[in-house]
Length: 113
Image (cartoon, rainbow, N blue to C red; front, side, top):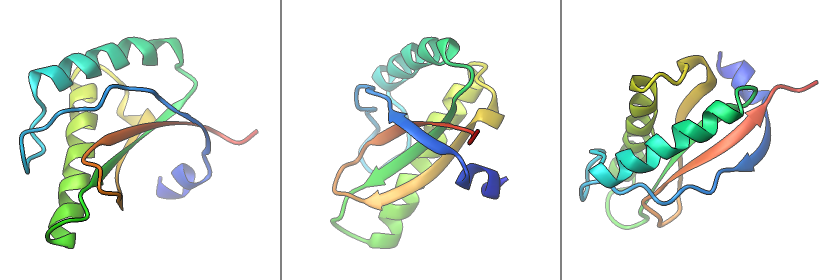
């Protein structure tokens, strides 16, 4: 649930090469898919962690459209990971802040003790 996700303790941000999308779209390029394939291998080593996938967006242009694009990009990454066997119960996609970056961040979280 959203409440359970809110109780997770962030333990770090994964250093993942930037995902590349088609301009103004949430369409993953072949390069991004390769990056996510490498991430899947890392996730297998850390099954105890949950993965928050945070999409970011540009500060230029329409704010609402940029927030939606940020959310759509995070969701595209989640859907790709899901299609490759990563458990959806350990992932959540959210729109981040309008940072000026058009990237996706991956944050590990764990349940409180």
